[in-house]
Amino acid sequence: MKMIAYLLKPNEGEILIRGNGELLKLSSHNKDYLLNNIGFLIENPFFYGNVTPRLILSYFAKLKGYPSKKVGERIEEVIEMFGMSDWIDKKIKTFSKGMRQKIGIASAIIHDPDIIVLDEPSTGLDPGARRDVRDFILKLKKIGKTIFLSSHLLYEISEVADRVAIINHGKLIAFDTLDNLESKAKKSIINFELLKQPNKNINEILNHIKEIVTPLTGVPYETNWIDYNEDNGVFQIFFDGHPENQRLILKTLLQHDYKVIEFSVPKAGLLENLFIEMTTPDATSQFNNKLIQKNFNLENMEV
Amino acid sequence: MNYELEPEAIYLQELAVEKQNAGIRRDFTQIGNTIAFELKRNFKKFIAMLIVYFAMFLLLMLIVVLIEMLTDTFFNDSLGYVQQLFSAQYGILGLLTIISASIFGGSIISEDFSTQTGNLIFPKISKTRLLIGRIISRFSYIALCTGFLYTLMIIVTFIRFGDVPITILLSLLWALYYAFAVFCFVTLMSSLMKNTSMSIIFSILIFLMIFNMISGIFMFSRFTDEFELPMFFLLSYYETIISASLNMPVTRYGPVLGTGAMLGGDPLNAWTTPLPLSAGYGLLIYISILLSIAYIRYVTRQSKGE
Image 1 (cartoon, one colour):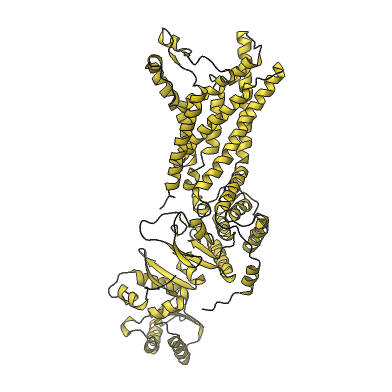
Image 2: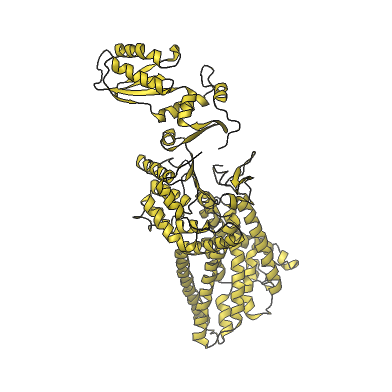
């Protein structure tokens, strides 16, 4: 991300950005031109403490060529969008990390770029601030911005991303929509809850469920597993991620008088599992590198 | 693929404004914007420095008054009085110059790396333009502080003698030129040091101690006396032109006060001030070298964690 922002120079390789129809190599000569329509937020932003967010935003907007006469109007728009009106004229040095992150995102979009690059925007934030950042990203997505987001918090990614790229040791090993990743990886987990938590004979219940759903999971018999979490009362069924199998499993459970009140396939867990499977060099794993190469045609791929 | 935009996005696209394209014109606009931003950002420092300058001026006045009273010799012309005020032996102007240069210049480069503010600013503006904007704005404040001190001295001199020597304007120009060289020195320190505090501490330390020690070593080893070696390689040497320019030509080579008593014999001789032409070129060379190294260091330096 820092290399795209031209903060670091690559030791090898090159960065190509489409400018005026053709792909151009990013260099010191053309970086102003090529990065003109991109907004950056690199990690947790640090600001000059003795200034107000309004002054910073005004400065950044002007640097990116936003017309001076309209900067004030634009700042008001962004303040409204991010709900910063209460503290826009206070000194930044008194702000929390979450507030600084909001200004960071605001400063990335203040000049109204079409592409926004957010590098680890949620790192080090408390849950409330993290949710705020997620909501901002969704807002930006809603107004038609292209967002390029990097994060180790896969749950955050799964909540906002249309397409996901997985990078391991500097190499792109997967790039697709979450649904496609799921179907290509042939792996997913169903979470379900029953009306009443089974308080006895849990092993008996698990064995019974395993017996009735195993033929429907679409995964080899020996890799099947069903689990139950006593703390939250959630059952988990490992399956191949196929929607038809998902429907059949639900139907079967209901046919066997299991009073299912919650039935879902969480994407967050999926992404996390996918990541671990794809990046762990395990010979027994069905998601080893060979399979990945086979499933995800990474050549001729345009990001 | 057919992407349909949300109604809100369509509304915002209609409001899209014409932005200034990247190019030479915007480069200058960016420098202007940086100057305006830096002036606003450092305004409180500027006010604080004006107070410091005023306090030092009062101290200087007190010293001069005490000297007059204790030695029972009163100045009877404005030139002698102004020369006394600017006299390098008090070191007030030199001290104020290094302090203000450190305060305004200490953070000029180092802060973007130590506090990682560079991650935000560098993708928006090139380091070259950023540095130019910062140098102009911050040096403007140093120049205003220096101008403020001169104004105070002019007022006091005028009240007392009814006239002010015109050479004080020449002295002001030298003071500004010298202040810029000192500012460049601090800029270099800022490019080399890890953070702002270290830049300030090392700049003041080198200027007030190391330069004086080097000067002392050369003087007491009789280099300046026997070989008539001028200290042109020490930036602090050029400070003397500020007071000397009030009444050029002055005796530029002579005994150094107090050295005779220290050595128990004849005092040591040394160059007390450079020629205006030499000072002009000397400072220019100094500025060029300092700024070039600082600039190269700045553009090649990368943020921590790379």
